Image 1 (cartoon, each protein chain N blue to C red):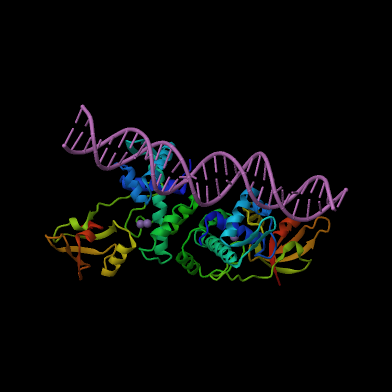
Image 2 (image 1 turned 45 degrees about the vertical axis):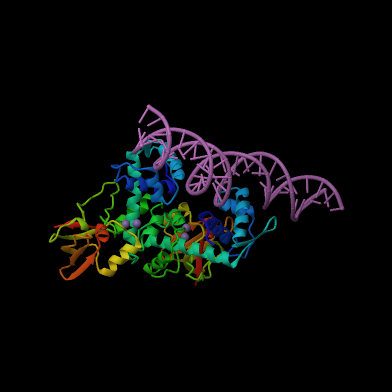
Amino acid sequence: MDLTTAEENYLKAIYHLSDGGKKSVSTNDIAAEMNTKAASVSDMLRKLGEKEVIEYRKYYGLQITETGKRHALQTIRKHRLWEVFLVEKLNFAWDEVHEVAEQLEHIHSTLLIQRLDSYLNYPKFDPHGDPIPDEFGDVRSRPRVQLNEMDIDQTGQIVAVKDSSAAFLRYLDKVGAYIGARIKVLDKVEFDGSLEILVDQKKTLFMSKDVAGNILVLQS
Amino acid sequence: MDLTTAEENYLKAIYHLSDGGKKSVSTNDIAAEMNTKAASVSDMLRKLGEKEVIEYRKYYGLQITETGKRHALQTIRKHRLWEVFLVEKLNFAWDEVHEVAEQLEHIHSTLLIQRLDSYLNYPKFDPHGDPIPDEFGDVRSRPRVQLNEMDIDQTGQIVAVKDSSAAFLRYLDKVGAYIGARIKVLDKVEFDGSLEILVDQKKTLFMSKDVAGNILVLQS
DNA sequence: TTTCGAAATTAGGCATGTCTAAATAAATGA
DNA sequence: TCATTTATTTAGACATGCCTAATTTCGAAA
Ligand SMILES: [Mn+2]
Ligand SMILES: [Mn+2]
Ligand SMILES: [Mn+2]
Ligand SMILES: [Mn+2]
């Protein structure tokens, strides 16, 4: 059974909020994530239940099914492949891609996505460092920690961001933090949890705990 | 005022059926082109009239407005640019692109279409030989004649096809007729209007009047 | 164990876009 | 000219997806 664009968006939100089916998700969580109202979510949950992409017992919550996961991962795969295309081929900045990918992810064509994948040379990560599921929905995940949780003198490499908003990404551009940068924690301020970071062995950066919490690092 | 996907599709159909605003178009013509019913068309004409992309007097027909032409040409531009992308970059065959382009043409992003145009090196024609309007809606048209209307011994170059259906395009592939091929009319059969054509000075081809009528030639 | 408040669902509406069937206007031709 | 055929529009339904307001359910606190 085919999903509508709205259904694909809801399912993707449910997949993300539930951390791939691990955590439970509330109607209100979904409403907040989708910028919609709880009543609309209830309606949609019933429909998604009928299409068997979630298992839904009203008043008791939901569970994403295996079919549902497959659909969600397929949409995520398309979203991230298009983001790579926009950045690598069309010279979009990493803060300009999200809105357009949000539309492109709903184009239906198996051939298209296969060819796009091949054209981009089977990328494993999108411009924000998020892993791209393969055509079977398998995700290659890397162990990553939030920068604010690292200790003084620990080192690593920035591999992803948690927040992909244009505002945050432009801030990172401005201060010179980017995916792939090698970093070292020079100092942590007890009082507010802010950090002093060495980037690429030459540049020193001060950032709040909040900012650091949205930067994901592969430790080394 | 923004147009919905359905409105964009209707407007494009009206633009094509009216030959860019020159001919008059009936409700039934539109219904046939859109695979829908006359009643749905009447409804939509009222809406398009309210949005002032057509001038609509019920029972008397419609006229596409200048604003309407701009919108239609913009959608046509996007459709054809995506077709070029699919063929040139993703190795689609020319008979595989239409359905996907029909979806891609509704993605909204000025930046996207500008960058795509530049990435493709500002192509002037799509894979079926149809001209791509520039960002201002200007179309570079070439004088073309239907192959079935050429006389014996006349020569030229195939520059476009009238019918872009997969069945027709695959037939052309099979017999070796392609955009850019140099041709010469060797013979015309009085009885049924069928033709004998020399392709690239080496291959001889027989085709019905029907087939020839869907091949457009730049004479030389 | 009962009560009460938060969370979730249902009821009822609205907009878009489709359909069939009924009504109406226009065109045709006797 | 006027009757009939044909094209077109309107009426009334239905599906999707959204909303606000009303109602129901659950579970935490008393
Ligand atoms: Mn994104
Ligand atoms: Mn991303
Ligand atoms: Mn096409
Ligand atoms: Mn084309």
